[in-house]
Length: 129
Image 1 (cartoon, rainbow, N blue to C red):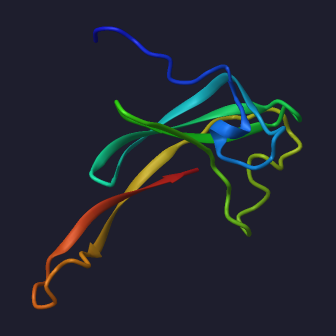
Image 2 (image 1 turned 180 degrees about the vertical axis):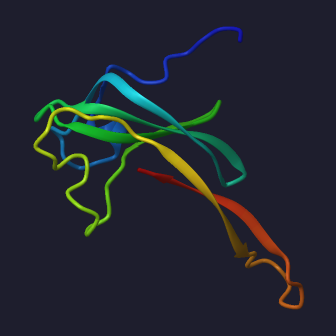
């Protein structure tokens, strides 16, 4: 590897996270880095990684995801679906044990495919636990 780059600043403000709450920020040190594979969007390949930071308001752990390539970087907080428990951010504990990822294959029919053909696209879905 030649050279280097800063992947994340020490504080991720609401503009970086893409949220409307002006006071919402996440700070490092960032822990529990978990590689989630790659994702393809608009003919661009992004590497995807999850990690844990802390809310600057409440000091609660927050699970985040970063997608990056040589051109662009996107950071977002991972929100747990309703009905899946309290989730990471609503816990009263300020300690976080860890995160694990696993993947599973998925099959989908290509919408651009001729109806007479039975070709399926094979993909991968990543799950966090």
